[in-house]
Structures are given as structure tokens and as C-alpha cells.
Amino acid sequence: MKFIQPTSWPEALEARAMYPEAVAVAGGTDVLVELNFDRLRPSALLDLGRVRELATWGGEDGHIRIGAGVTYRELIANLARDLPALAMAARTVGSPPIRNRGTIGGNLGSASPAGDCHPPLLAAEAEVELASTKRSRIVPMTEFFVGPKRNVLEADELIAAVWVPVTTGPQVFSKVGTRNAMVIAVCSFALALHPDKQRVGTGIGSAGPVPLRADAAERFLEGHLEETGSWGSRAPLSDSVLERFGELVAKASRPIDDVRASAAYRRRALAVLGRRALSWCWEEYREARP
Ligand SMILES: Cc1cc2nc3c(=O)[nH]c(=O)nc-3n(C[C@H](O)[C@H](O)[C@H](O)COP(=O)(O)OP(=O)(O)OC[C@H]3O[C@@H](n4cnc5c(N)ncnc54)[C@H](O)[C@@H]3O)c2cc1C
Image 1 (cartoon, protein in one colour):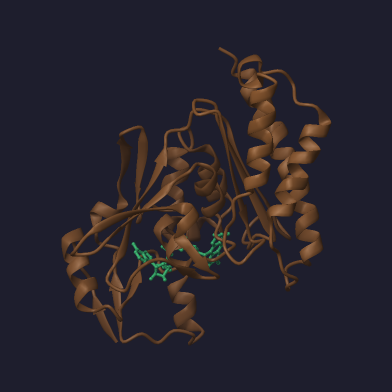
Image 2: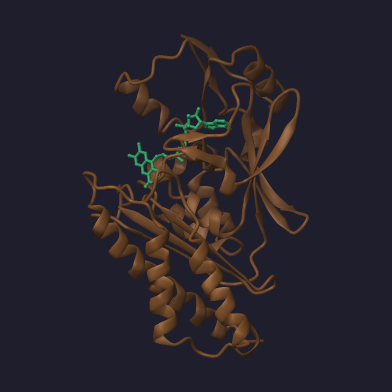
């Protein structure tokens, strides 16, 4: 097996163009499992671990740009204030060794419907930056996943970064699993309130072929907040609004029965996660009254 180890981003893109059959490796926490179980036997590995440009983050144009090689540990340590739901999701990933190695780009690269970064990135209206030697393009999170474990990446492309708008309102992420750590989500849900745009963002994980947004739930809540002037008044939300929001979140899911849970359980759990997420976020919004 050929092992290619670029030390800069231009070199990495050259290598990607030259060896389109090579499997990219960042932290290796997904790739190494595939190799160990003999589900993957590539002719070449393209190790991105020495590409420093991928491991950086910073603010640009009202967004935070997170390099694809930023690990969960770094997300938790450095971005919890600006991107709270993403940091909450990162805290639930695997164990400390997995959080030290695993990267946001690797989560997107694997494109598992259960990937924990995906719901908060969807809710935050993030975009993914892809690059090749020929071009660079920005893909909204809503268009990035095309099927279970499949994304829009072309053979000559790498994930460069994720662009997330700077948070202006509260965000939460919650995940149901069979225990508190080292667990793949049975289902998960993220909510972000965007008071500056008077918009609501959602993301559902592990309850469909791809991570999903709950569009009807977003429209329902946006409509309610606008009609009642609640973005401005920050009046409490009634139980019926919380319930309805949860129901619409559950309705947006497309779960299956599998070893982790039944589809019916996932729908039920999402209704609860949706209702709770909204009550937490709205309380935080009320308490942050200027
Ligand atoms: C014990 C254990 C527990 C885990 N727990 C969780 C969990 O709780 N939640 C969760 O979401 N995941 C979990 N995972 C899965 C894994 O840790 C995450 O998906 C992680 O984000 C993968 O990142 P990585 O850098 O290790 O990716 P890698 O394994 O290096 O790569 C994963 C995929 O992404 C591609 N890739 C990586 N970087 C790039 C790039 N820059 N451009 C293009 N393609 C790229 C690779 O080719 C590969 O297809 C767990 C894994 C293990 C082994």
C-alpha cells in the first residue's frame, strides 16, 4: 500500500489529483476501523495529519472558518463560546482518545447519518468548503450528504474547511444513546435560534438516510414568533407550541428499525428532544434579554 504524506495544503491537493484512488486519512478513527475489519483495502493512503493549514480556525466575514483537520478536543477547548451546539456535540463523541484524534472533516468525510457534528452544523446553516487543484467550491450543509455514508465530494477533491455563521442566539445539541459515552447516537437533535435573521435552524441525526433539517418545524416556529412578536417581547412559549414543535421535528425524521432502536422509538425520542431543546433555547434567549 502506498503511503503519501504531504506537508502542505497545495501538496495535499496535488497528491489528491495524482492519486484519486487514495483514501484520505485525518485522525484515522473511521479509516483504521475499516482497514482492521478488512472492509477497505485501498492501494494508497493520503495522510493529511501533517497539513498544518487544515488544523487552524478563525473568524472571517461574520463566519468562523474551521479547518477540516480540527479535532473534537480543539472544538471543545476553543469554540464552545462561539459555537455552543457543535461543542456540546463534540463532548459526546467517543472517548478522550477519539476526541484527540477525530476531526470535523473526518466526520463529514464519513458522512454517517449518525455523525454528531452534522445536526449542529445543519442548525447553524453552515457550509462546507471543498477544494481541488482546479477549483474551490462552497456547498451548503443541506446539499452535502447524498445518501447513507455518501457525500458530494469528487474524486479529486478534499474537504478544506467548514464555514459557520457567528452565533447570535442560543443553541443546543442533545443525543439519545444507550449510555453516556462511547455510543453511536440512537437519534440526535440540534436547535439554533437566529434572532438577527429571525430564523430557526434544526438538525436531526441518526433518524434518516442522511442528516436532516426539520423544515416544517422551523417554519412553524418562525411563523409563531413573528405573529406574536416574540422575538422582541421574549414572552414565554406555551406548552402547546413546545409540543407542536416536537411533533413536527419527529415528523421530519425518516428512521428505520435497526439494532440500536426501532423507528417508532426514534420518532418518540425526537418529539421529546425537539420539545426540550426549544424550551432550553427559549429560556436562554429570555434570560439574555438586553
Ligand atoms: C471508538 C469510536 C467511537 C466513536 N464515537 C463517535 C461518536 O460518538 N460520534 C461520532 O460522530 N463519531 C464517532 N466515531 C467515528 C469517528 O471518530 C468520527 O467520524 C471522526 O470524526 C472521524 O474523524 P477522523 O479524523 O478520525 O476521520 P478519518 O478516519 O481519518 O476519515 C474518515 C473519512 O473522512 C475522509 N476524510 C478525512 N479528512 C478528509 C478531508 N480533509 N477531505 C476529504 N475526506 C476526508 C476519509 O477519507 C474517510 O473517508 C467513533 C469512532 C470510534 C473508533
